[in-house]
Length: 126
Image 1: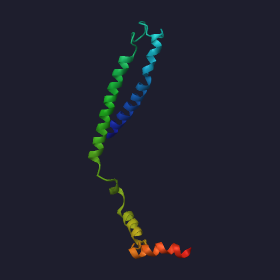
Image 2: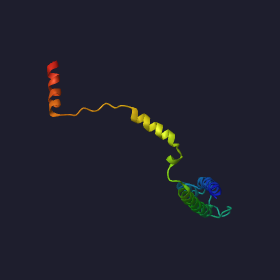
Image 3: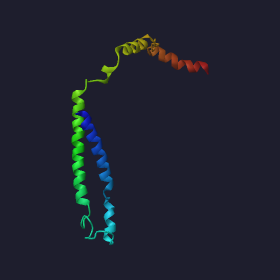
Image 4: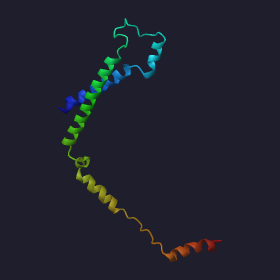
């Protein structure tokens, strides 16, 4: 079922890309105002293929959304919860033991006496 839905989703997405690229832009109608095209003897009439392409685009967009939501729902219900469940536990134990074996030097505490010693140290070097 998932394979069929994935193939349908990919084909609808490619079809949607093609159908959107076939449509005219907003400024494409400016040429018709100066006598270019728009004749009543054309195949699609005086408006051209605009209403047909709009309906095809809307239908393919709806199908695209339905397949997207369906694939997301199927993916969420069939998942085990985490990708970390697939990692072998031996690797995780080795990595945590390596991290804990490294020694980190402690950070010295900052006291008022230490602050006064640091402020006097540059004066002594001058």
